Length: 164
Image (cartoon, rainbow, N blue to C red; front, side):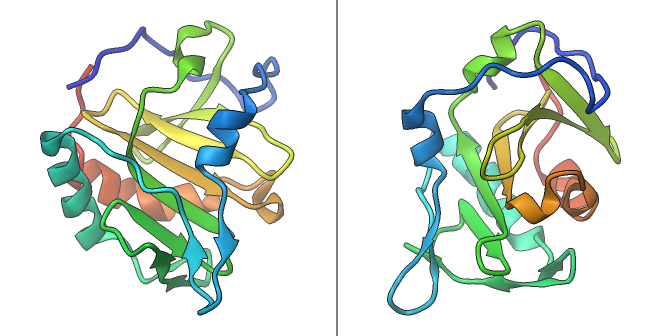
């Protein structure tokens, strides 16, 4: 179980987040491969966290925000994509440095707390208070819409236990 400093939920219109380095941004970048599947960087969590991610993978919906689930390249139980990489989920990512910043914004959706990072490519959300970190990166079409999180919060809550 990873620990982090308490993060209080704030409105989406709160103070701006610090920009993350290009290295962190590139770790979540997706692009289409020759066979049409989305290329997604696969995290390397410890075995216990990987087991939680495999359980989450089995609970993920076939559609999110009306977008069908697509294959990722490489195939992994730690990643999932909906639409043409409009919604990208990675489970077992390293603890985000932004969690150290008291100005970091967060939102609670259906019992799951998510850290919010606004990016030019679309918002990025990372679970907090869970035994592993789950990242959901959304394309710009979801710039002001956390709707996809409502469909992903249930599977996260059922498979990734709360913890500090």
